[in-house]
Amino acid sequence: MSETAVQIDQVSFRYGKRLALDGISLSIARGEVFLFLGPNGGGKTTLFRLLCTLIPLQQGSISILGHDVSTQGDWVRRHIGVVFQAPSVDGKLTVWENLRHQGYLYGLAGRELRLRAEEALEHLGLQDRRNDPVETLSGGLRRRVELAKSLLHHPQVLLMDEPSTGLDPAARSDLWNYLNLLRDQQQLTVVMTTHLLEEAEKADRLAILDRGRLVALDSPGSLRSQIGGDIITIECEQPEQVALLLQEKFQLSPTVVDHTVRLEHAQGHQLVAQLVPALGPGVRSITVGKPTLEDVFIQRTGHRFWANQEETTSASHLSRETDLP
Image (cartoon, rainbow, N blue to C red; front, top):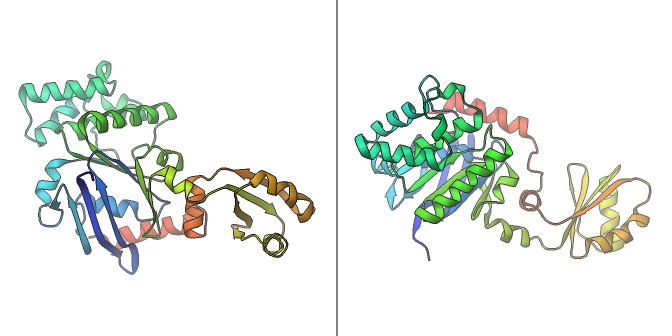
């Protein structure tokens, strides 16, 4: 069994009356690329802030590399790297100046700082932009500078909050290639948050959060395989009646999700051939596909990944403005 890098035990957190985290427990192994996946309001950012020691624990415990974040916060901060969702680079300074000042904060100077900065620039493809003011860089290049800053002091755990924000597909791919390189060569533990389902497929393991609860925990492939068979989605005028017909005539167990009928079947394409004549003209479309992480989310929560996003996002913003210490 791999050594544990992050241990989270029964962590709950409230913003006033709103429960942002509800008894979260899990462990993350050293050298693992681990991802917290969830829609806005799911609890990802709150958990990220707790891991970074930005806000104090209310209930439960968290340890990083065997050190408690509540009682040994100074030690934890020296051994983690952090990439925030909001930019932390100084746009008026050059790339090299940003790295140099970051190094000073961690007690780096002279030859050691220069070598580490050169290493980061080389790995992230920033050598030819070292003397450019950061404000002149594209969003993807600025994100690379953020990552370079976070790695200067050679952290053992890298925490990243929505790191792909503002990146185009090519820059996102470059980011993942570098993270995998760090994992393989340095046994760096990477812990990320994201709301991008396609990005979650690249993690070694992921935890799916919904409204503060941990609803799934495993590798992407294992989570998809737990569904089994094909996913059939039926768009129709009267989904409740269609679901009842499928139960009575075909002995199936469909669910109605956002006005569509959804069901799982081992031989989806064969079943569709039987369903089309039986369901009649009220059906607008029938699609068949292999399980995705969104299907996993629907199975575990009963609603789509982006359901009620405006409500949860507004509530989250309001809670942070009024109740955050």
